[in-house]
Length: 254
Image (cartoon, rainbow, N blue to C red; front, side, top):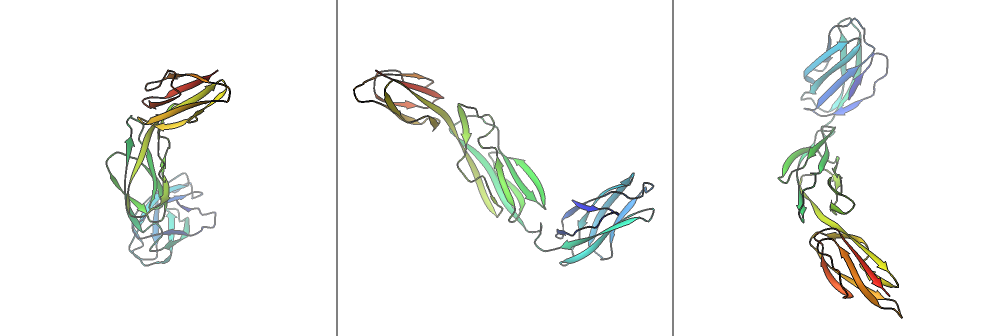
């Protein structure tokens, strides 16, 4: 935001030709009914709009085709009150744009909520709901982008859509497909003197997982009790299950 205020000192603001600059101000004459944005440098302001009400100014302008340098921009009310600010025009600040083509994919099925791509364009933070078809976005070079959330909306304590990719970075010309893997939670419990593998954790949907029970010395394995689609209930100490849902497996030892 490019801010002017007749009662305060104003710091510089860096922009590039073609950038849109928002203007605001306060403490102008409450009797002002109109205002204008101007500069002594021809071509600095290619277009502008300004309004004032009860001493509050709002407006905007587009930076014209001028060389790099520092210029003075003035907002003036029709009662002759005015405020000025130094505006720094550079060839790089907010001006160097790159195109990022972004989309997302889901591996393993399901219908989670699409992620959000957060980026900066012309110095303004923006967001885009990703689709499975690539979308070209103009992003300030070197600015920070991110994808949220991870896991995706629709996830729960027993299933999720999770990405192991880098979901933030610095903007450069690139094409990225953000891949989210559908996963189910495998919960493993021990009842009695023994150990089981694997421990509780996330497994990819549809994955085949071998569960193994090992009795402590002097004891023996009795059985598995499983719940969930693809689980196993039975007396085999080692068995392969299929993660078609969240699964709980309890190994019992005697």
